[in-house]
Length: 500
Image 1 (spheres, one colour):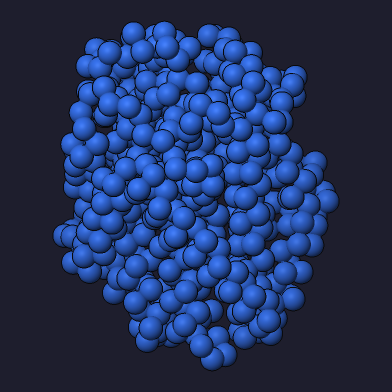
Image 2 (cartoon, rainbow, N blue to C red):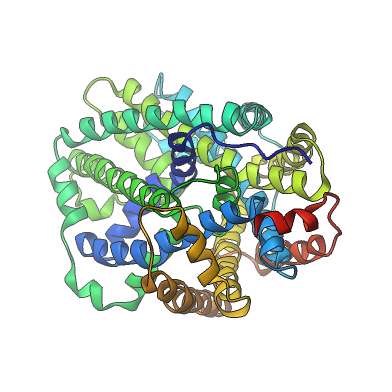
């Protein structure tokens, strides 16, 4: 088996890890979650969640990949011979996410072009659902592939697979060294422009004004842990894979703190930019800010085009910049997601990177066509909800319970990280991962199951929820168990002695 590739520099690794963590959710999920859960008061549970779950989990996954020098399945196999299935489960979660994430980036590419002449007109919602998506009237009615989305989707996959084909230092690292600084600079310019608009102060006041009563609400704390968990690329194989390319002498603990705080810093910046812009829009329409707040896809492709329409001068320029930031944030995350199964295929079957990129990326790109159909948005919505809430969350719970409670390797992993890090973790780290995180993730799972038993997600028909939600969420676990029982093609059993 060929020598494992390595990052060219610590800076390159951190940029790649930050690039993975900073994705579309930072821009369109965090501002709405913070606003809905106490505004300025939300930052207290958010910071607690970062320090008790986010960074401890990052340290765990960085250490796991660094110590065992493999993709997620290989690292878990080297941790314990019966743990490989968990690595595959997380890889398949990443695989599913990549198939629809690429389509959202394709939309952003199209909107970068539409911004040049404000093609969406004065009815952005009608334009998005009608002209761009050509959305079917009925959920479940797939319809044909939308040609305009297909072309943009092809661009997304070609760029992604070319970067991965180039390898870790010459491909992923170089891409992130260019696009993460560009993303931050562009977003800073957007935020600076947004806070100078009329009404920006009203928007920021709405965002930051604390509702201290929210601190006593358990759901607010769950929302904070959920936001940290989903935004840091934890529990779907990415950070384990990326850290496996680190050199032997790497400051694991400091790297985790830098990655965690950089991600949170960008989320705060996104919140400022988004609410300053929402304050401007509310003033233009004579409405309170609360009435124009929206999160997710609606914020990006309905609300922001409406805001851009109202921009006083340079609206085409700032519109293009906004959607390019979505493209850049999405691409750096997508590359990290696809790398998880490229690395896993290489390790498991002893094939070249080129073959792994073509096999894994080829299958994912074909499946992603399903989300580029006229009924694609409905499927995307259901798959995204279930794979996040019953894929990532459950896989994360399984990860900490397995390592802390069953194979009892927290101590060994902590010793490994501390031995090569300037900053040493103590009892805090073990308590966070052995007690706090399992309890909170367990409660999140219980609450999710309770809500979904009470009513179908999004009011969708049961058949759709089962097909694109339940079957997908269960399917990735089953596939993980099946692949975990397949014999290794490479000589990893002997290599295990060298790394552990």
